[in-house]
Image (cartoon, rainbow, N blue to C red; front, side, top):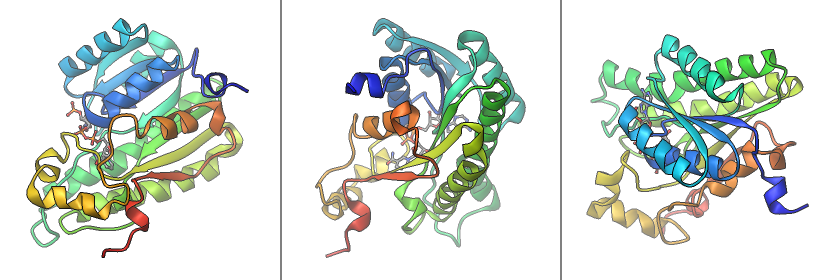
Length: 258
Ligand SMILES: NC(=O)c1ccc[n+]([C@@H]2O[C@H](COP(=O)([O-])OP(=O)(O)OC[C@H]3O[C@@H](n4cnc5c(N)ncnc54)[C@H](OP(=O)(O)O)[C@@H]3O)[C@@H](O)[C@H]2O)c1
């Protein structure tokens, strides 16, 4: 079997939430470059339209769909629009997310809810909606949730984020168990540190840069480092993988300080 054949996504319709920047924009590019037609979802629609142009220029197929992932009516409209453009979504990448830096004692209820609504609850409801539609259409499919190494370990100032990401890891297992027999696989990727808009200010500060000393490969993640895990989980190359969380962190999680 040739790698291109094993990982191919030709004729598949994919939907990526949070595709207006960072990891999500890259996920959309990679899925499109490997044959999927991709619906890009986020709130900043002008950014999505630029990404669509980039994908089309490279020979791919894509559509921009404006939606807030915490809005259930917008979620259903987004799936409807993606289906109208490319047919039933059979690859769903639940990537949209927000961060915070408040310590637990200072975290407001509003701040806490914003992170949990976006990073945990929305992941569940988009996975649920996507899976319902795959099953109703009689299609096999793959859901890829974007967790984090903070779903396993914790850092100061990340309480709500870490709670949400740990929830995503457990949610991935719970959904995988219930959906496997119906032909829907559910997995997650737990990235380590990648410099994006979500953390650029912190990682580019003196304190942030010192984090690279704790990463065995000696650098932050960069464009391309998540491509392999994404393609494995999205394509039939991962046909027997479900309920898994693949950690892609340059060895950060296995390294003790010192
Ligand atoms: N970068 C890292 O080191 C790292 C590490 C581990 C995990 N992650 C996870 O990777 C995912 C992507 O993060 P990133 O690093 O690429 O950050 P980013 O560049 O800030 O991207 C976040 C994306 O989420 C979207 N988003 C946020 N809230 C949304 C909402 N309510 N509705 C719709 N879209 C929303 C944003 O789009 P709009 O603002 O246009 O809506 C944006 O496209 C997140 O789940 C994050 O937790 C990142």
